[in-house]
Image (cartoon, rainbow, N blue to C red; front, side):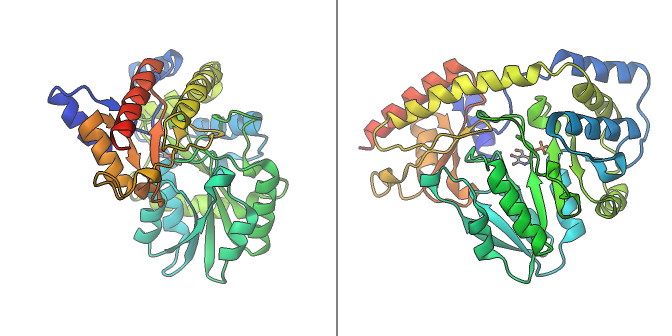
Length: 376
Ligand SMILES: Cc1ncc(COP(=O)(O)O)c(C=O)c1O
């Protein structure tokens, strides 16, 4: 967000910036979803609702999950919050006691680290290997488990690497965490943006419900980032604790957004595969194009809409000693905004969001190529 803000500042002063910083779809929210919100306004659906979301919305979430991902949650095992970020904040608040350890695979989405620390937990980082496409394994997690481990975070498809944990590996991770009585927090916000195979939820594994918290969001799946609607699927007791917390903080997600959410989940679903097809087209252009630039190496992401190239071959040249230096120089000199890997716990990468038009991507790659050549 800081990169996007700086890019916006430069843009407003007349600089032609190409921005690949923001982690949000470039598509508009589908029309049927917008209409549902307008209808809700017209019908004066503008009062408080139940703090954890209307029964109608929670039922729609559980049903959609059942149909799309093969889970079997009931409304009492579901809470709607003000975006996936809010869900994660609430789950961590409800579960973490001072000094509890939370296993966080690297690279990680930046919010996890800060939220765990904020709630008095301790992040225990687990490295993944770039040569393996940053795919997490159960063995990686096993090495980091201690008697103090409370939660293991898995985010697949991953922000920022786009890595996807296979179903088989997920099963192993689940077996491992449940056998140690550790909660597996599965952030599935990008579940529907996978390029090989079908969307997967760890909550669909037989018997997994007691040890799993599924975090979901309508932000990416339905291009609704600004609306702020996310949800948790978890054991009743945890949902009830989060509900209590939420009733004294934000209370319900915005009433009309909840109606829009019901439409998103129960209405036509065609916009989702359409967006996925477009992301695939862009990925299939961007990743080989980046790999064609001398000095840049990029693993092929299996999901989400991010490329995470390694730019460490530029270190030690022209005053560039870190991904942060690289990103700053790229913004200053080539007017391309990306996010430095330091934000995600790695030192040698930049994140490029390809949720941008093909034209912007082509121009962006060209600018990166020229920038890279100027540093060789
Ligand atoms: C991995 C991951 N989880 C959760 C979120 C939360 O999204 P939101 O709060 O918009 O639902 C994001 C947003 O970028 C994300 O990348």
